[in-house]
Structures are given as C-alpha cells and as structure tokens.
Length: 441
Image 1 (cartoon, rainbow, N blue to C red):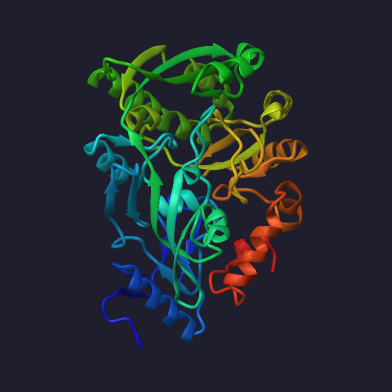
Image 2 (image 1 turned 180 degrees about the vertical axis):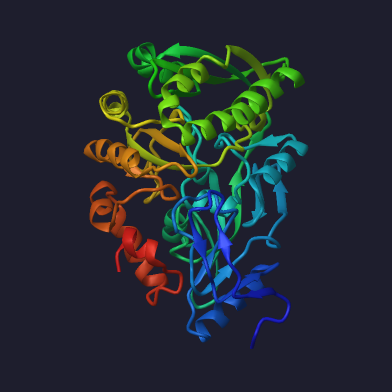
C-alpha cells in the first residue's frame, strides 16, 4: 500500500552544499514519522528502488546520492524527550545541530563536544563521523547513547549498549549503509562555560609545541596558512566564569567581515588570478588578532562558514601529525600549487566505533580546502599521498579516492562492519556507488 501522508516529489534534483554533487532520484519523500519512513522503505523495495536519506548536504562525497528514493529530513524534526535525570536528550534524525544546541541551552544542558558548524542534521553529522577537537572528549557520534533504525525490510530497531548492542556499536557511524536512522539519543551534561583563547603563532612554534599544546588544553586546534609560516591557534578550556562573550561589533568584524566577507573577495580574486594567492595568504594570516572570550559551549565551538569550498580531511595517528604537516608544507613550497584556504588541524581521543576515523587510536585530523570552482585535484592528490603514507583514514563525508581494499587495512574492525551490513541489508537497498567503492560489493 502506497504512503498516503508522506510529502512526495517526482523526478526532482538534489544538490549538496558545495554544489559538486547532483542526484536525480525517481522520487523524493519527506516522512514526518518513523512509521511513515518505514512504509516509504517498504514501498521502495516493492518498486525495486534503492533508498538513501540525505541531511543538509554538507558532505562533499556522493555518500547520500541515489537514483532511487531520496528520503528528505525536512519533516522528521524536533526534540522527542529531554531526561535531565538520565542526562540524555532524544531528537528526530532531521533535527539540525543548531536546533539541538539551542534547545539544550534552553534546558541548561549541553553536548560535551561538537564540530565547528551547526547546519547539519544530527543523523547526517553522526553517520559520517563529524567531529570537533578534544583532548579527552570525542566526536558527536561517540556521545550517542541510543538510536532508532529502519532496516531494509521496514523493521524498526531501537539500539543501545544493551539493546542490539552490535548494531548500536556500528550504526553510530553507519554511512547510511545499515539502514535509515530516524532518532538519536545523546548523552548531555549541565551547561558549562568555555574560555576561548585565539592567538597567532608561528608554524615552527606550533610544530615544536604541538604535543604540549594538545596535552595542556581540553580543546586545541589551529589553522596554517599555506605560502606562509603563520598559524592561528585556538585553545578552549572550561571556565568558572563569569561569561564574557565576544562583543557584537568586534565579533562581526572578525567572524563575518574578515572570516567571511573579505575572505570571500580574496578567494574570488585568487581563483581568477592564482599568482596573487601567496600575497593574499600573507595578508590573511595576519588579519585576525589575538582575542579571549568566555561563553556557553556551542557559541565557542561553532562559527559561521559562508564561503563555499571543497574539502579533503584525513585522520592520522596523532604521532604522525607533525611529520605529515611538515611534508605538506614542503610539498606546497616546492610545487606550483596555489592554495587560498588555510589547513585545519584538530585532535580526538581513541573511541570504540568500528568506522569512526578515531577508532582504536588517538588521532589528529588534517583538513585541506580549496575555494569552490578552483581546480583541486593536484593539491588534494598530493595531500592524500602524504596522509595515506601515514596510515590515514579519510573523513567519510569529504573528498578522497580510497576504496575498500585500502580502508580494510586501516580499520581493524572493517570486516565486523561489512559482515553486519551483509546481515542487515543483503540486497543493498541502501547501497549506492560510493558505498560500493568504500565498503565493497
């Protein structure tokens, strides 16, 4: 029986945020409940169509692309339950991280750690391994306490450490390969304050002091500007207060005018005239001055990102971070590459999720970006060769060329995940070309 209440579009076109992925599904559906979504899956199977859910399209890969049935998140939104005593919140899968964070703050609660933007859906962010930076606190997926999953036969499974634990272990970073996540329960804590200290620092000093900077700060990250020896560093640590937010004017100047408005212009100029990029990089690397402020977590962890780009990010063993970065810097300097975007570096502790990029090892993340519309292949290929030489694991939602043969060698629990996929989705209802490449047939 066909779905009656689901909003359906036929022969629609879907594009991701960066504009580099386009999908033309047979139909798109926007269910408003788990039951409607399960029926949409059953109907797709009856019609011989594959199924893929999408979020807000912030992945750069084709992980969500399909020529079958596209599940849109628009109406599967909202907070289902806040349990202060248990320290959990349960939200529908299409809820944005922004809505989650704002709702939590209204209840005096917070996630322990998060990434640097809030535009993704909770299911999209966790399924691809979205992370922030942390000495002791891990990715968003590592904060999941339970999830609801619609499988290939339309069944609804509720999974946790005690209920379907083997599915729960894998589905926290599931790539959409095990089923469609319809709700997530996160562990949360009482809202706290973070003091952010942002400071320019030389590349050499950051390399020399990298391990010390990671060890001494709860959250450390930095940006290196190619064609320069300059970095901007950020250290976030818990504070007893009082709150001292960024001023409205100074915040607008740093976060909107410099980091978005003027940077957009600089990237546009650099794309048109690549020879100007090294000079622009030197100016950009000195544009942001040191500042310190104290605020609630999501206002410190996240910032606006309006300049559109393409990105590749690799997770390397933490001890490989400095050698890999030195190799990347040397590669840029001796090549004819012109790189307009800074390189972002973050860290995470080891976790126990089979396909988490930090699975089983302390990790450093090295992310390279280029402005949208700029030829990226030469730079990304050079960076990828360096990262894979160090056993790097590509971010599932960011550009890379790795396949199952490579990935099975850098993920000790890779076979555990693919065996579970064979059990839950033997007919590859949730498959697509990307999953075939990264997980195998």
